[in-house]
Length: 231
Length: 231
Image (cartoon, rainbow over all chains, first blue to last red; front, side):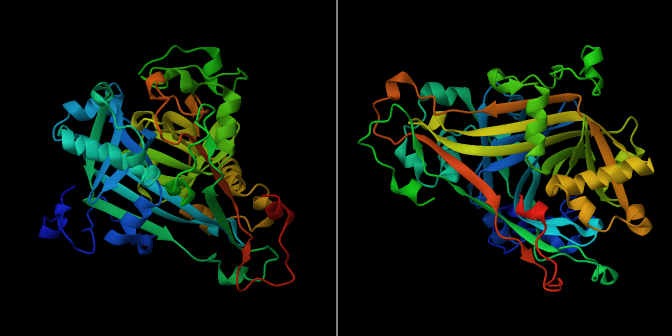
């Protein structure tokens, strides 16, 4: 799974695009693939939940987990006892992972069953996740994971104390071998199907937040903060 | 990764629960794990998008894809040229996969950064995906994948023709080694944090469908079908 090394592939560069590799060029629907850095960031920043794939005893495991992004680095945290985080600690040069983020934007109903689809935006990141040991990087990563869920929230909560930090493992995955895939638009029916009597079009999905529900023991004097109203 | 064989593990049984295995008992948050068959089905049936993990050249890959459920079997389809579907065809006894489905129900904001969480419901299925070759099972599986997205839609679209069927691979994963994981409720703050001046509670998420958008070339005489209005 080699690819050509270039100065733009460092992850710290300002190149507009990631460099495609064998792993990030799809075998089909190539026209949907993109390596645009801004597009990748925008897809990642619209949510906070990824599906993280790794190997356990040689078999694939996919678990949902929170992440945070700082520049060209993604961070995932968990209990120091959790299996992937334990594995990352002992693996050299890190734990091989695949981190995937997907938004579904619309259902696409074609006249033919074959051309049914969904409009989506996804990012797939391949790489080796490494355990973060630097205390300052760990602190920034934990803030980033909280702020990925609710921007601004890390400043309005008690930071982790020494005991909590000791129980928390943080791994880092660099945005290096990355691709986005996007489908937009309506159905692509075959010309000979255009006269069929089936409704065709798209059904856009909606996503949002309901009114925040205060905890039973919250001091009623503490109102809903601006960063929550802004969600 | 052995587990005790029992009559309840056949997948066709009517036992209320799946039998836990080494792979489906979590190392942490054990109280959130469930093997209840109805719960697993309900989580699977609330959506149509999974994240499918498999190995490619020994490294994990996680891709979003549609699925359909028929009883204790999940089906995934794709181009005969796609990598996992090609691999499943040649693998014996099938392609080792992990299929994961996740719903996020609410953001959980604790007073401490450490106790931030999300309320979620997830299902993780481990197993070997096998290529479906029986024509009738393939037909039912393709209908199930369409109906998983929009119940009732398969009857109101043109079924795949011979050419489309030849281009489509279908794999099956039995619901056998399965677990659900569910978090509900509010934040779990430490007693010593209860007096901190931070807002705490949950932010429920909303999901829905916007008004269907007909394709430009749809005959205006064809109205929105009942199964779409019912979404």
